[in-house]
Image (tube, rainbow over all chains, first blue to last red; front, side, top):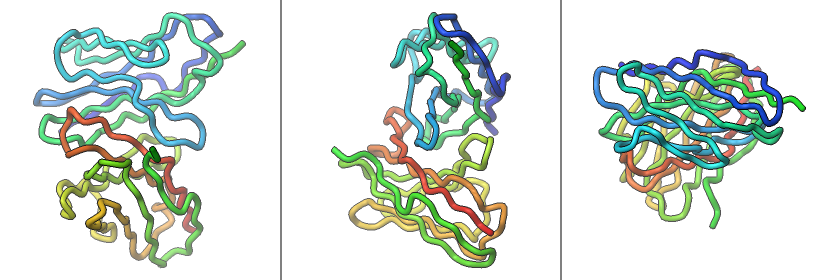
Length: 113
Length: 114
């Protein structure tokens, strides 16, 4: 069975500082990886996804993530955060036979001025 | 182009009652998935509908059932509500149930069971 572990429940960071949100997954088969963002009282918005090819994936709003198969990780990074990046971020995996998503518990990113 | 729309946005029900939540997929999408997001947790997959049939199901009891209509809209029904069913219910739509197709999420229905 697939599972996703987001290692930090909350990450506080100052504005314009870099940030990394960590995600590890476990699966016995090939998986596809996603990061979603959820702003307060809203649904989920896709930030980026890894399906195949280059292990460095660039997404919206300046975010990027790197797929590391040997470490079963898919960490999300941004070199300089803004107040508007304050939100909850979810890492998710999907198997190749459909687009059912298995989500981690989420990481709340708090950007302070 | 309207995205995924869900109704109602908020709902309060009493334990033991039944509830129906509705979802209209993004224009052109034919696949609808439902997720339950309890407070402080990530969304959990309930089931997915494609071609008016339940295609995949997560680890939820039979009290949770659904339907997809010919226009691709979908309903989620929950019978015999428990306090633990209180959550944000998210609907996601996509163009065919394949991993290459992006799932677009609605804003959710906040269900409170008292």
